[in-house]
Image (cartoon, rainbow, N blue to C red; front, side, top):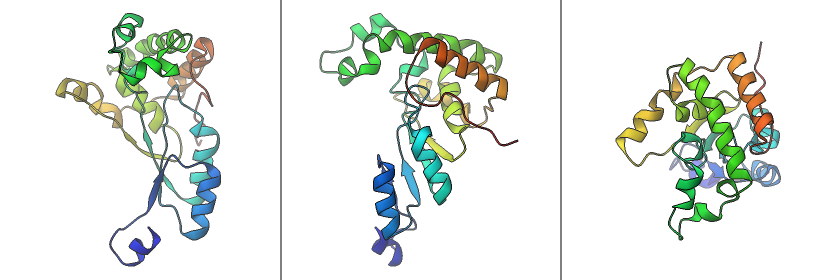
Length: 188
């Protein structure tokens, strides 16, 4: 990739799903311009090691799965998960099975008040939370229909307050959902 940048064929070189060790090895060869890790209200371990590394090295972070594969949209329930097709990978994903499923669904319910206060949606709150972290420069969110897109399109304009972030952190701790830091540190 470094050669492609030098030849002018690409402007930047990025990686996906790299650990800090792999990032260090890649950075020794050429600057890593962009990192694409999973990052959501449930999958938060990125905030422990990858985000600090990226900030230190001036590497952009484009988080993927900020809605945790639909789990944070409010569209899932225990019965909907049970009704998924047998070949749907989510039926085997720990976040979609017990006891994590109940914890995750409780977290989603706790986010409803924040979404309502902002006259927004649960998907927009989930994306805005990921974007609130220093070092996260973008988020990849998918939609299978125009209705789903309309549900989160305003996430870029949704600015969560310190009180919102505190409330979300308390909800994460209370429900036991996911892993990793629960609240971004904000600059004063």
